[in-house]
Structure formats: C-alpha cells, structure tokens
Image 1 (cartoon, helix red, strand yellow):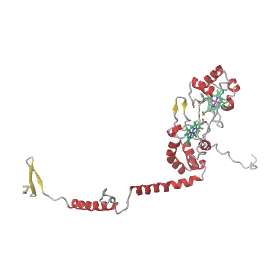
Image 2 (cartoon, protein in one colour):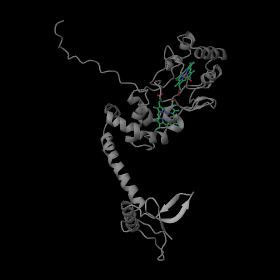
Image 3 (cartoon, helix red, strand yellow):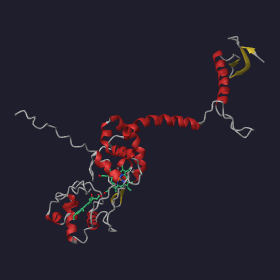
Image 4 (tube, rainbow, N blue to C red):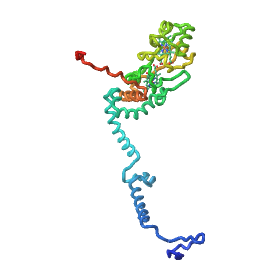
Length: 303
Ligand code: HEC
Ligand code: HEC
C-alpha cells in the first residue's frame, strides 16, 4: 500500500526506517533504462556471435555465427609478430656479424630476440646473461659479460667461438716439473708476482701464456696476471691446474669444452650470428682496431 511523502508529495512504499527515512517509488532515470535495454540486446548478439552454449543435445557445443576461436585469434597475433620479425630476419640473413652490429635497428632487434636463444642454448653453461656459473672447481665456463676474453672479444672472435666451438689444451706438467717448481710457479701466479722468470720461460709456459704470462688469444690460454680466474684460484687449485693441465686427458685435469653450434646443425647460421651480436652486446665486446688511415702512395705533398 502506498502513501504520499508529506514534504515532496512523491508516493512512497509505505516503509519508514529510523522514524523518518521513507522509500520513494520513483522510476529509474530514462538513460539508465535505455542502458539496461541495450545491454539485454548486447547479450543476445554476443551469445549468437561467439561460442556460448557449452552443451547441446546434438552432442556438439554451439560454435557461434562469427566463427571465432581462440586458436584463430592466436594465429592471427602470431602472424603479425612474424611479419615484423620476418623483415629483420630477411635483412640479417646475408649480413656479416660486424655489419649487423653497425646497424643500430638490427642490433636492437637482436638484443631482444637473442634472449630466448641464449637462454635455451648457452645459459646452462655460461649463466643467464653470461654472468658465469661457478662450481667447486672455479668457473664452469667463462664469464661472457666482462671484457676479459680467452679467444678475443672482437665480434668475429666471438662468432668463431660459437660457430666452431672451443677446446683449449694445457698439457699436464706433473712429469715435466718437480713438486718444488710447481709450488714456486703456483705461488707466483696466485700472488700476482711477475712471471717473466727463468723458470716460467725455461719450462715452456711462455709458449702458450706469452713471455709476461698475459695469455694468447690464438690458443685461448688464460691471462695469468689479471686476477680474473677461470679455475680455482687458491694456491692448491692453481697447483692442480698446473700439475694436471686443462683438457689434457688426465683424469685429474680441468675440463673446458665449448661445443660447436654449427657442426651438429644445432643452430642456423643466422642464429649463430645473432648470438655473436647478443654476446658482444653484453658490454664486453671489443671494437676492431680502427682502420689505418689510408694515404694513397705517391701523394705526399713534398712536406
Ligand atoms: C657445455 C657447456 C657450454 C655451452 C652449452 C656453451 N658454452 Fe660457450 N664455452 C664453454 C666453455 C667451457 C668455454 C671455454 C672453452 C675453453 O676454455 O677453451 C666456452 C667459451 C665460449 C666463448 C669464448 C669466451 C672467451 O673468453 O673467449 C664464447 C664467446 C662462448 N663460449 C659463447 C657461447 C654461446 C653464445 C653459447 C650458446 C650458443 C655457448 N657458449 C654455449 C662452455 C659452453
Ligand atoms: C700448450 C699450451 C700451454 C702450456 C705449455 C701451458 N699452459 Fe697454462 N693454460 C693453457 C690454456 C689454454 C689455459 C686456459 C684454459 C681455459 O681457461 O680454458 C691455461 C690455464 C692455466 C692456468 C689457469 C688460469 C686460470 O685463470 O684459472 C694456470 C695457472 C696456468 N695455465 C699456468 C701454466 C704454467 C705455470 C705453465 C708452465 C708450467 C703453463 N700454464 C703452460 C695453455 C698452456
């Protein structure tokens, strides 16, 4: 039963709360009613367009008249991504790693797309982002995000490391050196003492590590003077490296094998190029020596 509100004159439902709170019977505003009607229409359209009724007596669910499926939508999205990628991939296919590096747009693309490639193929040994993985014997594989390189940090050196793999070799010295000599050498290396000693030279260390022990990129011998350690850097650890060598075949020797990613067809040429640029861009890549200034012969102006 309804009554009129004594001040506004609007009919009320007759309920009164708290002494003076009355419930009016006003209709909702017109815009609201239109919205309600529109959404009712929208629901019907939506139901008919999209797959909406999960079960049916016919044994098949209702597929909607729009033909939409999640798979189709995903494929359309993927197609759009591939179109963008395809442009870059086609371009870098015939370029050298150095040329890719010189193209800032391509380099940016490689920095983004190389992450998954590196994660899938390299991170297990070199660590995510090349930070290195340590085990009790030192580093499992060299750190790639610093500027210390066994085989050189120019783009072509890095490319070669990945394509061809690397396997350095230091023979076990246990039959060539006395325990005292190994002790002297290990202490000198550990303490950063100068290595241009008669012992270092006389025992053939210089053949691979160079006269001053700074290492040689051609054979991937470590720089022994830079305090960047590949293997256990305690005196005992260094003694073990010298005594048993690296990849020497001695069961006590250190093992350091970088698989070739080209040989087994594990990665395509384009992928290897991308990874070379990606690794270079960790920050430790080294620029090629600037081209010597070219002066045409016979062009001296008499000075
Ligand atoms: C099974 C472990 C392993 C995997 C996988 C691996 N590497 Fe290596 N990598 C090594 C080892 C060990 C060395 C050092 C080899 C040596 O000392 O002779 C090395 C060396 C390198 C070097 C030379 C470093 C220097 O200081 O000159 C580069 C560059 C490199 N790896 C890049 C990669 C990339 C890129 C991938 C992925 C495509 C990869 N590696 C996958 C173990 C691995
Ligand atoms: C035939 C070449 C060769 C000769 C000879 C050689 N080395 Fe090496 N040495 C290497 C290579 C290559 C490595 C680096 C292996 C790696 O990092 O993958 C190495 C690594 C080392 C390391 C480990 C460095 C680190 O960062 O952990 C020490 C220490 C070392 N050599 C000392 C010596 C001494 C001392 C002699 C002389 C008695 C000697 N080596 C002779 C090739 C050689």
